[in-house]
Image (cartoon, helix red, strand yellow):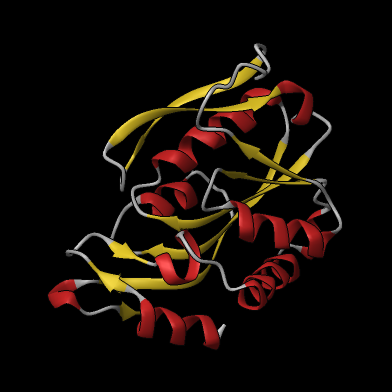
Length: 189
């Protein structure tokens, strides 16, 4: 994932010692070819896990989740952040704070699309404190589905999110690990 690393170093913007903006790569604009490479890499790393579905949280996780699901030949399910008029009233739901948005939202997954027969791979764009990830993991546990692992495009290793998930015995694969944003510089492991 050398190209991803180069793009992050060239196009990432450090807002402060905790916030890295990757709008040009992941969160506002999407490079389809690079995103396909990321999905193929996650599919390679989790190829032996008999994945039946890829799951993510809307919206920034969807492009990489989609390319991973495509590479694995399985459906993509995404947790919704907003309840709509046609939303499934019988859905798994969890309240989660958003690190970058500074608000608490509900994430929801229809029980129709996540069952005890599923082995899921959770894909997300960035992990900081891991609140959204922990919320979706709780939903996966309540559904009875098996969590094969978590794939993260960018892990902010100086924050506790990925470490806390690993401490639960869950396999976490990160394509890029950021060790620090000190001094406005992106430091990679």
